[in-house]
Length: 69
Image (tube, rainbow, N blue to C red; front, side):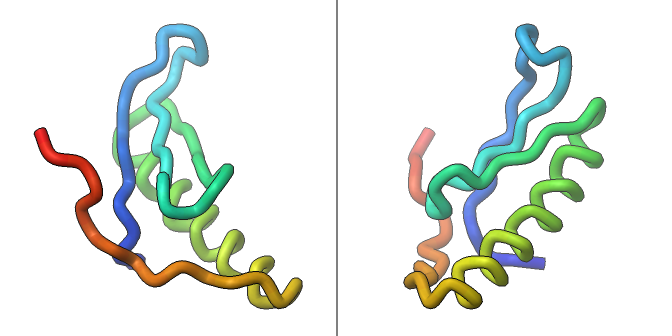
């Protein structure tokens, strides 16, 4: 499990839950349930990090909670 913040919300437009990872540009996943969207986000985060390392791009350290309610 990663320590990056994941923002989860329902999208009527997509008809699915969306999981965004704001610290990793372009990193997001979706799923028909909250659990599937979160699980898919974990996979996409791992792939994002692996690709960044392979390309020699910087990998941001997780900052934890970014937004406050």
